[in-house]
Length: 530
Image 1 (cartoon, rainbow, N blue to C red):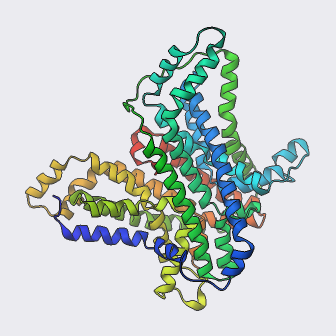
Image 2 (image 1 turned 30 degrees about the vertical axis):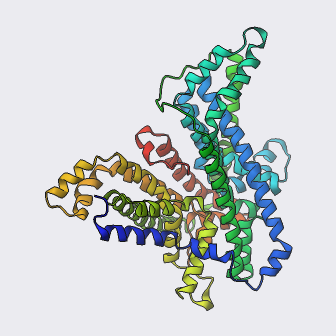
Image 3 (image 1 turned 135 degrees about the vertical axis):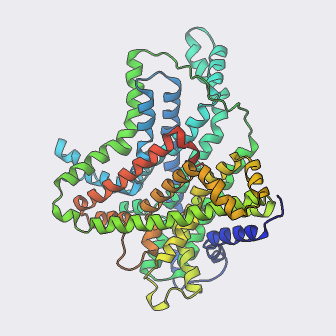
């Protein structure tokens, strides 16, 4: 079918181009245009923004890699009680958005929180160390999931081989660990690098956590330059620095995987757990549960207590906010999934280099921080005069949908692409031979088969949109809030009991994400590391 159906090919190229359009002004902003405040930003705060961003990202990634890889190692290798439950619990911090965990931990350690109620002691919670702790405890499941997937293939055979080659006698344990480092860990490097890259991208995307804890990063600088100074060119240039760092991270991760190729059957065989003593079993189980409690359990308890203690005023307007959030998420999800289906179907009809390359470019959006995409949308809308120069602080729903598409299209592209690759071409060819048009084949033949995949992709996109904060803060219309924006606004005003019910709604949606990710029946619809 190569080269046929030019209208579908052109349509796919146009849709994918619209999705990546917000990146273009950010890239050009690195080389052209000097805002009124750029010299001031460059001379006074730029170096601090860059250093804080690098320190925060590297520190959070290192801690997340240690926790995520260690947890995967323990759960894969040792026989612990209720292993399936422990696997699910270890991913639970993904259900709690990091910005919610941030203000919750601040409340836990401050006056009137759990720690103060139990011991009468308060602990300051601010600065770089607090930001690293919250981000690492909330994001380590990304590393765990990628390493767990790698270890569930054929590393069990490698473990057994390493044990057989280890030195006998009193030095057997040290010989075993030495051989593990030499023989097993190298096979996990691509998985660790992939998980670390996901964590780094999420840290770069974080806005509420650094600003709440007083850490000045490039993302917070973009907001400050835009909202405080009203200087869009300078904000665009700062966003370009963020984009450059993300692209460097992606390049390093890609180069690391390209230089090393590790074989593997990819088969999920029987895991042979190492028997351990009851004392070690208790110790290892505690080590697995500890990050779960720090990243999910303790903050959830505090949220529940705040919700119970909150008065009727905490629920004023929550219904309208939830309704707006759901409607916005539904519209964005339908738009994003529809574009993902059309682009993938066009590639299916025209498997040429151009269309496949365009699809690949459109799929990098999830690696780009939301602040970068939001600034790009603002520049595009300002250029097209969609946003009034005199009312530049007032956004539009169209801008929000534009930004959501640019960032979250990859979430739908990946699983739908996998579904098309599994689809046997003879089915479509048979329908075409009977005189059906490509559109009719898509509607009557392909989509009914893809319903589970589409449902999983739509759910993940919807939850991402509902929890989104940076883009929504920058682009939302005047007097329009989502649950995430309401939580951030109330927490910033230290109205934590009022924020708690809205935060619990977001946590409940996050739990749906965990169910989708951990359910084998919907594994094809989970987000893959890029």
